[in-house]
Image (cartoon, rainbow, N blue to C red; front, top):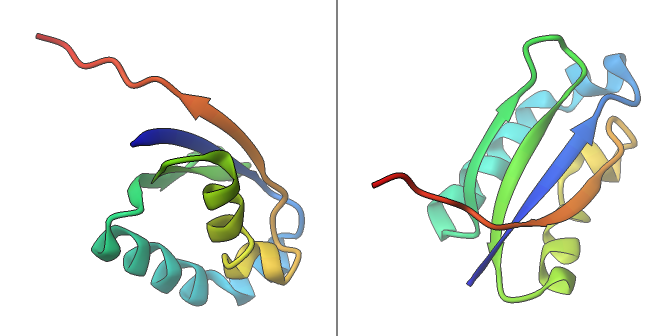
Length: 88
C-alpha cells in the first residue's frame, strides 16, 4: 500500500464554508473504510492536507474526485506520492 499527500489549497472560502459538513463526512467515511490515513486543515486558513492510502495514483484520483470540496469547486488539489518515515 502506498501513501499519497493531497494538498487542498483554498479556491473559494464561501463554498468551503458551505460544503464543510459534507467534506467532513467524506473524510470520516474514508477513515472508517481505511483509505484515509490522516487529514487536517492549515492554521493559516489556506486549505488542508489529506493523506490517502492506495495501491496507485489513479485510485487516489478517484477518491479525490468524490470529495465535495472538489465537486463543488471549493478547493483545488495537488497529489504527491509520500514516503512515510517513522522514528524508532
